[in-house]
Image 1: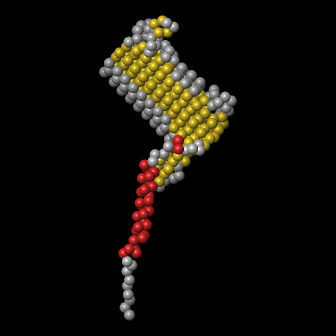
Image 2 (image 1 turned 60 degrees about the vertical axis):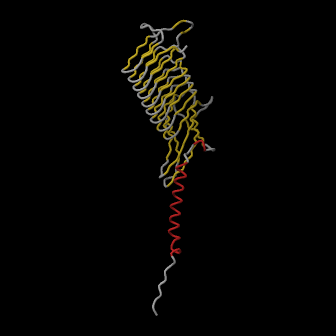
Image 3 (image 1 turned 90 degrees about the vertical axis):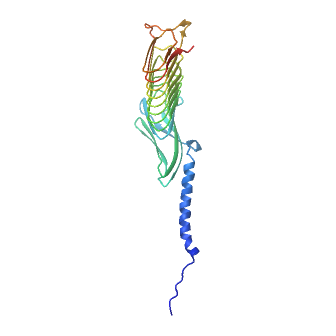
Length: 291
């Protein structure tokens, strides 16, 4: 008897291929879904908290891939309290996570988020004991601080820096992001490689600003001893008090420009103890009265 060969109907051979296509389609759908929805740390309704022992009078905060908020701790606080918010999703990658540790006087805050599609967002609030000066080393994330009475130094590689209501010296540098200060009294050293620099309601006696690619706007609420501002590519606008204790104030104003208009409307006196020096390579220079 001859052998009889049978062939499965075409439809009977489709389930495996259909399942494979369905799996691929499902993966694509997940990728598209994750890619379309940006992560937001504010979606974390149960933030974690931890208090680290503080050694010494200086705290260095090393932060990457996270928004960072710095505030003074309440009276009597002995350690550094950290609150963190995190939300992350990845496709075809490792599990997203955040890390924190204290190494001596260095607080390290990090995030790991990688995959074909990776959407992660982290935010940290650091409460610093009073009497402790702060150094920040930040990479990829904005930095905000308010209410400090001790010196602060910030180095940010990719993110804006904002400091308000500070009563001590500020040394703020950003390689890619705007710098904003408001309501400050200590000496200011503000430098931005790519971003504007803005200072409002400033009563500092000494102010130094250097913006390589961005505008400079300074509004001083008290008569300064010395203001030095430089901009490579951007306008410079400086407002200084026109009077003090009912008396008119004169300024020793020096300006230098390569190809820019200059408008100085404050009273000038080369022998004045109040010095304003402005250099702009490509941008208008304005020195005016704030009152």
